[in-house]
Image (tube, rainbow over all chains, first blue to last red; front, side, top):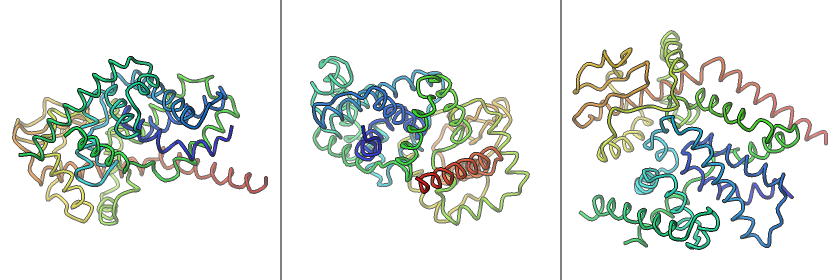
Length: 155
Length: 208
């Protein structure tokens, strides 16, 4: 297992997915590190690159969920500040802000579908939830975006 | 409509990148944890330590670090009297919170103006006055005054819309807290240790 090659290839993608779940740089780095530790420890056999990518996403999102449980009683980092840190363009900030205002479970589904291009069945496999749950979360996310876009840009 | 929204989200998230050196840090930390056996063995402890580090570095403070600010803001911060910086640091260390709290959410309009003013602030547009700091909730003046409680780290926002001056006061206060934390002995020590460790590793890698 070539750790450096795997980190160079996949960490940006994992960062984009994880940063919107716990919502902090430190937690995201912790989740990615834990993921690659497990990668070295388990030495899983992958069928192809897509299999490897899906495995890494699954492990990383599980770590994010654990971190969230740990922080459950703590206030969150202000969405305002986080969105401003991640992207600079006004419309991009709006999109990130809307995403961060969704429940964490919904955010992961939205990112996997719209940013990483996974289909419903694939997302269900990665996150260990039913296809029905994935569809519902996507539907709610789309509705939230639609409402905001109507209010903000379609007046 | 949904395709356009998905495209917007995709575009926004594709602009999100890891901070410089995070990949190197991840590689180094994973190798260290696997080599010294700290991975798995102290999972909960590491999480608690992570929380402590979060408290120390990001704790009650906005995410953009002091290192990332403009020279104009840096000069403004460096002009703050030492006693005031230390008082700010003491306040942060005494707060048992992970992030700021707010008496209400920012309105959409306030968020937009804050985004715009953040850039102006970096370019030297500073508030005329400083944020009103009070010891606790009982001292918060009224529903029309912006104030921050030192004990709970809560911004009490007025019932009306925040003015540009007030938004600038918040940005200025956040910058001052970042600066105070950056100056704290703990952060300075951690930075020196990290630097020494990185140099040691680089030297070892050179020998190999």
